[in-house]
Length: 380
Image 1 (cartoon, rainbow, N blue to C red):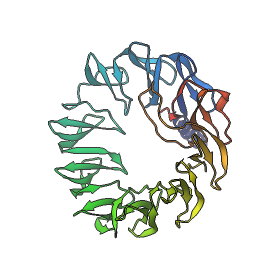
Image 2: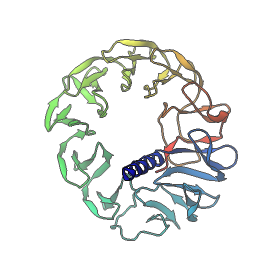
Image 3: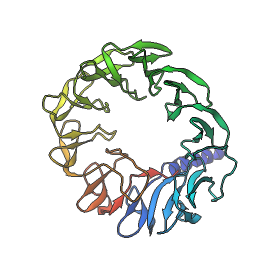
Image 4: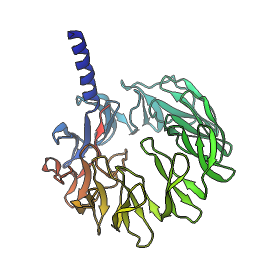
């Protein structure tokens, strides 16, 4: 029993450590990192600082870039002109006008296959390029996909979109062809459904069978958590279809954004103002906002009433006053996150006093504004 308890404790501890999130901030002249409770994770001591990734973060001393770990130990000395984030223990760096791979000891990795361009790793995979063709390698330096494609896109839904000639298909992480490149366009795989274009018709590929969507000229990707996605009809109006390709909400809107918490931002086109509809297409919050984003899982949505952003609840009540900016990463770091809503109870905002973080009550985290602040990210 003690052994089982110890194992459970270790698993819980590892999950707790993994889920720890910090944000890069600059209160005055130096950058540091704060925890989600507003306390200092690493005191301000860097000229510039990137987000944590793979347990380390890039930091700048005014002349060169190096890397620091979660214990605030410089694990790779300041020596690089440019750097990208670590992934799977590998980072791309530039020194003396040359890009190359390094490991977490700062040593150059020379075992990677030859490539005309050095691509950074994402989720354990990176592109290689030879001439006009691209392929994929894993973090061991093994060629997963030979350079034979015109273009390869980032992994989404567990699969990779590829272009061969003028047509698109899907491959898996081993390079196996899942869908032959026979389509004029292909989207993200989501629970057996993919939006495609074939013979100038747009529709859905459902378990390998192409099904055109009546009157549709454009379809957006499904999210795994969504049963609806939006589509544009021949008259340029937008509505929502389900995973069988049936119009569930008629295309009566000029603009829409995706559903979350049962509501989606939309413009009918009559007033050029945003409101929110439910999954039957009925207005729940009338059109009244100059801009509106999707509801977060916290149950709040960013809206512009006059000039600045505030936050409403699902009843349309303005629970956080419209006096903030919310979009765009700061100019001092190189990782951008354009998400505009709440995440785990906090949202990054900008005021005349600087950047800060609000909770769902509109209270400023630790009562502190910063000259710069990035989104919270997991350390690992």
